[in-house]
Length: 283
Length: 294
Image (cartoon, rainbow over all chains, first blue to last red; front, top):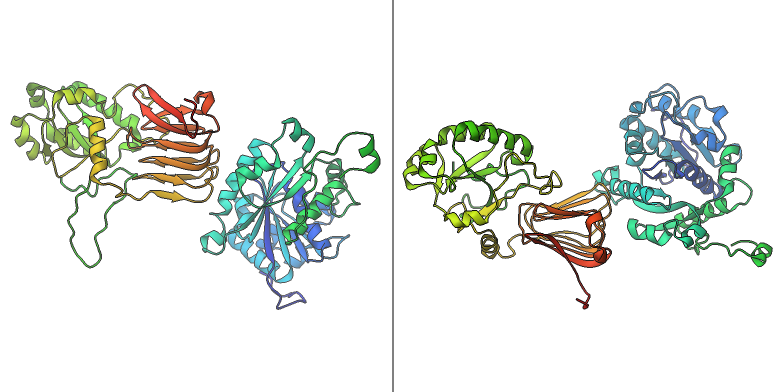
């Protein structure tokens, strides 16, 4: 792979590889990847977000860079373009880069050796590599998680999503480089998205405590069900780069807790409905 | 056919390994075998049914040591039986016949000529109480829920004549013969969806939750000191004395010795309680633990 261009801050520690995964589709992996990577970048870390969803790439849309894609991850793996050509710099945040997936290739073209070389290259240039995993437990998902040091397991408050997450947590403990080389296990963190405390209160939705009880992994926080997520997606802006909004704030909390800060959990309790709360705002 | 070490069911592993400095070590050991009860020695009836049985059992019986029980056959019927042919037939089907049980004294020579071990005659009334190893022909849907639930097998001591074949008495004897010889498998992390954990020889103890979509197998008891939401199959080798214990139970399926209850059939009162499950002739019984109201 192309090693010609070293990052200016050489000698620094290698980047941490974070996979965003869930097993189930549609739970918000790509939204989380984009918001989390942008949040890390906002906190001053040089971050790249890599789309592993070969054939169904979406990350570039969420990041708003779909019209600037020339080369993609598979071109780099197959030597058809250099990493520099494929990396897209975010227009809003200097620390943030995107490595898009191929929309036309087959996911079988994603070789482990190729992914390893690309990740090794990226590790020398960045502080964090965020891997946006495809749904399922097929090759793309396996490739995305294989080199991970840490993982965000994205779960919706419903049983099928929890069960799929459970399955993925088991695989993170057995089917990754860290497991195979008997290193420290992948650090797994729980992120609950599309959380609606009022529906939890009515018993329509699993509570965050129930999910933590089943999955038994450290909890980074909930992202509330929010209109701003869809608005941000359609606008191609990660929620953490939009104007202040509840989902963006939740993702910043998650980023800060991931970075080791202790913060009280928010968005777990439904705002009281009434005139007073309307006057004094949510929270 | 004394090579007891090689033919073992796929879920068995060598239990004893000799110490490295000594070339030889003598040790008593119990081997689990499948008992094949013959009720008719007419080859026109016997072999088609055997074929059905082997087809149905598939790989469960592959390389399984088999004890041929002819107790149910009278002397004439035993005369009709061609032991050499039967041996070749069973080996051809990848079974490993090791001996013949319940044969008349007059048959002993023919049995040893065929290369089989003649084990002592068993009382007929003892046989009637026990169930046949695997019934041929009829499907045992209710008996064998999961493919991993092995056919009913009974432990015998290979070197000695087997004790009277009263099932419970025999199990007690086997257990008393080797107290705590088999260390339990202990799992301290959550058992997650898609994972299987098995204790092929003894008890399985899980000190965490067992999540939906996972499976536990044990030759002996299963203890779950957490929530049991997956499948738990105890006594997979047919031990009806095995039990399942859960601190908080809502299993997808719980089975003992092949008899099972699915989640929908769980008694309402036990769901999410601490309970023990045990086997009876008429089905599995649930006992709520830590409650003094019954």
